[in-house]
Length: 90
Image (cartoon, rainbow, N blue to C red; front, side, top):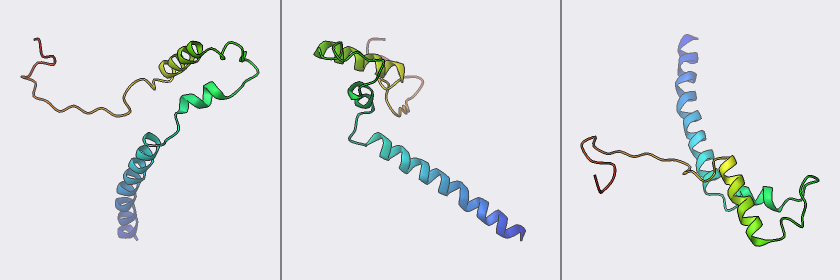
């Protein structure tokens, strides 16, 4: 009985990791921009005359991206030597 539970736990951990990776890759590679859902959806609090101008729409998109941290990379991993400078001019 103890071997069965231990075996199930050992299968659970990699399965959860693989499911998380698949869900992350699908969410990053989805063709829909999540900001468009906020900008294009008319709301009771939103005045549509303000959103009609293209510059206002772009500014609204940028504010939404910054609010939800969508302007940052989805995943960043950098592997470098500590002896190398972080910029070219140092």
